[in-house]
Amino acid sequence: MTHEVRAVVARQKGAPVSVETVLVPDPGPGEALVKVQACGVCHTDLHYQQGGINDEFPFLLGHEAAGLVEAVGEGVTAVAPGDFVVLNWRAVCGQCRACRKGKPWYCFDTHNATQPMKLADGTPLSPALGIGAFAEKTLVAAGQCTKVDPTASAAAAGLLGCGVMAGFGAAVNTGGVGRGDSIAVIGCGGVGMAAIAGAKLAGAGRIIAVDVDQRKLKWAEEFGATDTVDSSRTDAVEAIRAITGGFGADVVVDAVGRPETYRQAFYARDLAGTAVLVGVPTPEMTVDLPLLDVFGRGGALKSSWYGDCLPSRDFPTLVDLYQQGRFDLGRFVTEEIALDDVEEAFATMHRGEVLRSVVIL
Ligand SMILES: NC(=O)c1ccc[n+]([C@@H]2O[C@H](COP(=O)([O-])OP(=O)(O)OC[C@H]3O[C@@H](n4cnc5c(N)ncnc54)[C@H](O)[C@@H]3O)[C@@H](O)[C@H]2O)c1
Ligand SMILES: [Zn+2]
Ligand SMILES: [Zn+2]
Image 1 (tube, rainbow, N blue to C red):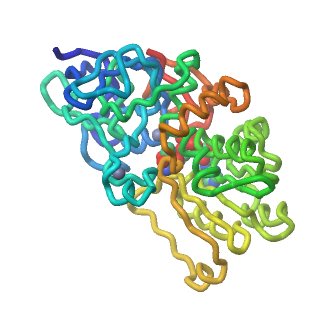
Image 2: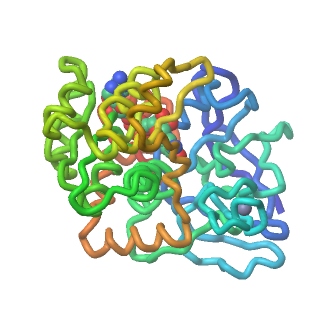
């Protein structure tokens, strides 16, 4: 059986997205059909719409979602109809060279559904990050479904599916921030703010929020930042050094992903510190750095794909912390919107008015 559902599609580079009828097949072997309950609007959806990821239009957007499993295909045992799940874009394969080395959070061969979802005229869609969840129902690989506490709010829990997990993990997993460490986070959108919240939970000492938007800096204080820097007015590197006794932070997270913010992250580290790039650059961006500084400053320059998370380990834990009141996932949900409002939500995000707009289905 084919399911006809309403879904948000980006047909052409830069063109406004539209709500279309999309055909979703019944799950085949290893697949799961999920009735989406909530899906957050991530900056990466906008990157897709702008052609910043690749040219495989039309895209079925949306990838930060939670919902109920409606049906599973042959051989699926890990999830069953009725399960409340957060969707992930890291269904680890267990067999690639990263998995075999015991580093499955780098898995190089993650699983997605094999059958395509299509437009009504039969055109196959490219689901954003292999998910495509601005849709009443979506088809994923069963491994993309992670069961979490079913009493949690779908709007909040779904955000773990991308941005919040990426930011949290960039600080805690990739950056390795721990008790007493100093951290600076450049860019305090949904991703950066989660890095701040993660650093607080991990016991970081100084937590420095950097943004060009005063509103974000105010919110950052509510999430646990001990210091804020408005980098539209102040030199971010000098300010971070001044706050950290003249040295720089142990870890600096770039949650913007532009040459100028990466350069700030590089120089705002203490000697032997760690810079973590979690913001996603576009293809034309390059950075020039004196090689002697790369050597002389030491430490580590890391990138954080999805916060180096393992969904099976990290999603249930973070949902439990949320339910215990120790990690305020609900505060990332700035507004709840309808499927028809995604284009407007891109503009709202661009104006910096939200951490997350979440589509409720
Ligand atoms: N690595 C991953 O796995 C992963 C996952 C999800 C999102 N991302 C990426 O993370 C980035 C952030 O996503 P988001 O959803 O938080 O976006 P967002 O638009 O909500 O937030 C971006 C923030 O950066 C600030 N900003 C912009 N330019 C700045 C500058 N020059 N200096 C300081 N601050 C600046 C903005 O004011 C805003 O607060 C995006 O590039 C997104 O694609 C990466
Ligand atoms: Zn693998
Ligand atoms: Zn995302």
